[in-house]
Length: 255
Image (cartoon, rainbow, N blue to C red; front, side, top):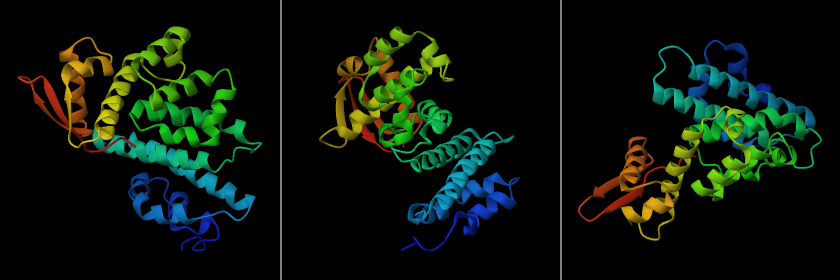
């Protein structure tokens, strides 16, 4: 329906906004919802247009990231802008096909996309389907990050501990990550997955069982993870300390 709305990204009003109003990144970021139809419907007809589309997504991502660092930006709003920036960076990476000779030119941005997703606590399984992300495993310098992404998709804390033991602290430092934060993010996403994948909603779990599933030391640490997940809006939770259970209802699986 919208595939022929614009013949090139330059004709898109949001692209013009980026070019003409670089000093007003907030306005651009707040227009992302209106831009959704256009970016989903646009299909480049040749390499020239593909190049323009790439420039748009990459530039818009960078502008949004800059916007998130503006003075007096509230923490929640800053995070939302960073999530938008990440989404645009992913759209940029999706323009590269698996057989593209340009894949290696995306290594830095693919690395950033994965690191940012982990740092922000975003759902990561969709990233594994992107050719530019898959290309990370073909290079010795970035393969550990791809392995880390795989753990966030289908692994657990024990897999993370094994990977960290294999590569040492440089696994995290090299990609601008902190080990404790990565471990915590993985536990939060694991809790969300358990809540989402439970056959009955809301899901009821015994706290003692979650000790092993979250790979923590005791029930108190399980409660800490639940409280943080609730505070960040990832789940609704109702603790019953007398019964030693928690009722979880996933509100929003981070995407």
